Image (cartoon, rainbow, N blue to C red; front, side):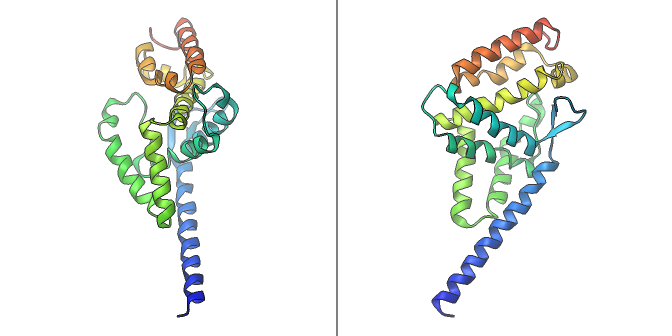
Length: 205
């Protein structure tokens, strides 16, 4: 086989791997979260959450504590929940589910990103780990947005899953305090939201 034929074959194989990945991540649309949609009587799926998270970052990035590469932040947000195709969505306040969450998600990341050509597999896997580690300005902002989005859903659905699961103010504060690492402005807003939620009976004090 000559060099040009080999190159064409490699290109075809690369495209096939990429399309396989694209088709596989369609399954994220079937992963249901606890979060209720605003104005619609159904639960949100993880693909919808990822899209809304990207939009939140585009709109609110100006409130980041540090200079931030917005495209990189969006990549982190778009990729961070793909592992839920295998691992499922672990409810934020499910202590039992959190025990093996990291192990389940690590296996999922290895399998799903491994569908891609090697260079993209390494890149996406590294981005997923960067989001989880929260060690860069982009990861801190993406995580802040990821904590804020369910807050908005719950507050604007009359307590949503907070009421359904009897969630307390202390539990929510423990969950969302890392927002301050990404944005002091958003953290100030979230604290006022929590106080009002308690006052309205959406959150147990």
